Amino acid sequence: MNTFSLQRSRRQRQRYQEIAEVFLRHGFGYLFERLGPEWAPPGRSSRSGQQPVSPVTEQDLPVHFRQALEELGPTFVKLGQVLSTRPDLLPPSYIAELSKLQDAVPPVPWEAIREVIIQELGRAPEEVFASITPEPLGAASLGQVYAATLANGADLVIKVQRPNIQPTIATDLEILQALAPAAQRTPEGRIHDFVAEAEDFAYTLNNELDYRLEGRNADRFRDNFADEPLVHVPHVYWGYTTPRVLVMERICGVKIDDVTAVAEAGYDRHQVAVNAARMVIKEVLEDGFFHADVHPGNFVVMPGEVIGVMDFGKMGYLRDQDRSDAISFYAAVVSLDADGIVDQLVRMGAAGSEVDRKALSRDIERILYKYYNVSLGDINIQGLTDVALPIIHRHHLRLPSNFGLLLQTLGMIQGMALTLDPDFDVWGFSEPYMRQMTWRLALPRRNWSQNLLRQGREWSDLISNLPRTGNRLLEKAERGDLLQIGLKDAVPLMTQMDRLTTRLALTLLLAALTISLALLVPVATAGSLLQSLVMVGFALAVGLTLWLFFSILRGTR
Picture 1 (tube, helix red, strand yellow):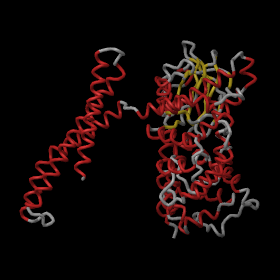
Picture 2 (cartoon, one colour; picture 1 turned 90 degrees about the horizontal axis):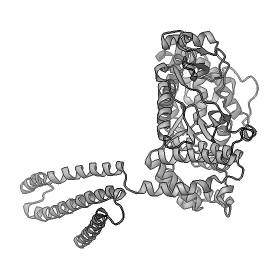
Picture 3 (tube, rainbow, N blue to C red; picture 1 turned 30 degrees about the horizontal axis):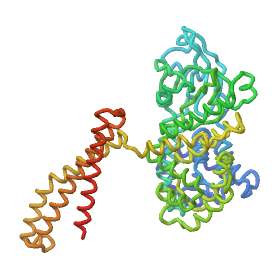
Picture 4 (cartoon, rainbow, N blue to C red; picture 1 turned 45 degrees about the vertical axis):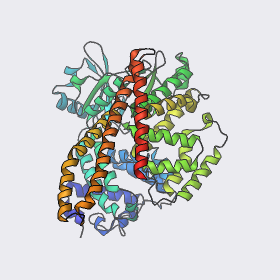
């Protein structure tokens, strides 16, 4: 019995039938067999169903996989783009093929787009804008972009979502999330969490369908670069922006990878490469919020070698710990330390406890051997990533999703920089920023102090509750209810608890003193009274720490 057909609506069954037929035609009928008989396409068996149009060889499967995704429309094109950053999920041949996915489709007629604008803004576009060009500047799977102007002469770009696209995507996501538990029961499910992957993909794609989020991404990116005049982020016109219509300032310039046009415009190609590299270093290392759709069409060169950035629908996020992990991983790679790389992969959670550390270290050493005595400037990030893909897949390394996105971003940016200036050393340029960021992540910060204070309050609650808890323990001990411990045996226990309380109190005082001094360091000027107080405070903190350390040693003898 086909449980899918019983539990899903007619619309979902029809769409699932379409998805299944496309994959069957491209030679992927075996996938349905692995999911189980209940997932055979409605009305037909995956064994006896439609055969491929032509025989599909093992070598052809990656190409057919990409073609099947393109044929199935926007949800699956987006899925393929996500999978192209996940070498832990697919073999290298599939990753290479999915990187060719084109998010360009024939445009929807203007009249259909015009109706969407009317629905969203409540008026015809001719009434809202001074002018609007019916021919789109670009057409992608989710939306189309048009040029327009306001009455005050401001040039705009209007991004409009394709009509009736949300129901189709909603149905596709429901099907993928229903398939995930079945995939989880396959042997691969012991390695990957397909249910969580499906939920993450649905969350990301639903966010892309709300253009207001893209507008907020642009505002956040602009705020991060407020003090960087060499990066220009277009203004969002919120008065005309809705979930399905995004109106932004139109920026014009030379495509960043058009070397001839950049030179003819009189721009310094080396400076453009420097500005692009500086932008990426800041967004990745300093902000942890980076532009993850770095194809050349989203970047233009403007007067003064300013980098104009467009399209903020696909962004990457890195927590402080993620950035710290990335820097530690970078340091291990630069040191050609295979065991250090394995250790860092384990700390990051990319390699589980079941990984064969010796085999993984041996495979990594083989890669590092190729780069022995090779200067950093001669190491190509994309080439290094391509060499690492088989190892990632062979050892089932589970890279955090943003790390795959980050590697792809860094590789493409390095490629653009080298196109502009073949002698540009991205690694050498980034090294000082890496060192600076290492210290910044290690030193106390506002969030760090807040976390420590919160933990201090928790310890304070514990200490304040110790006497009451101790009395209860003594009462139970007197009655013989606490592991048959009598009052005589409880006295040493209470003595140890008293020592513990004292040490905890001293620890809290030292933590508070350290936090206070850390907050005073940035404002203390040389030779001032405040600097003297800070120095005395540090001496006191060191003395108390040493005293506490030796007291603990004595207590353990």
